Image (cartoon, rainbow, N blue to C red; front, side):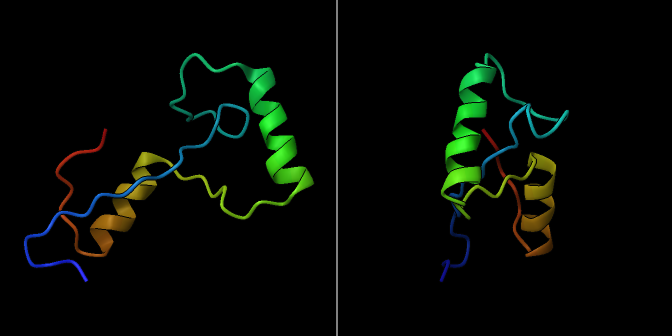
Length: 72
C-alpha cells in the first residue's frame, strides 16, 4: 500500500520502431530489435513484453488517481 503523499516509482516499456510509428526510441539497431522480437515473442512467447506509450501510461496512472510529477 502506498502511504499518503508517498511517491510511486514505476517503469514501462515503449514500443520499438518495428511495432509503432509513434516509437520514441532513438539510435536503435533495427536488426538487433528484430532478433530480440524473434527470440522473446515468436520463439519463447514471453508475455512480459507488453508495450505502451507514455500517453497510455499517463492515462492509466491518472485514471487510478495518481498525480504525475515526472516521467524520465
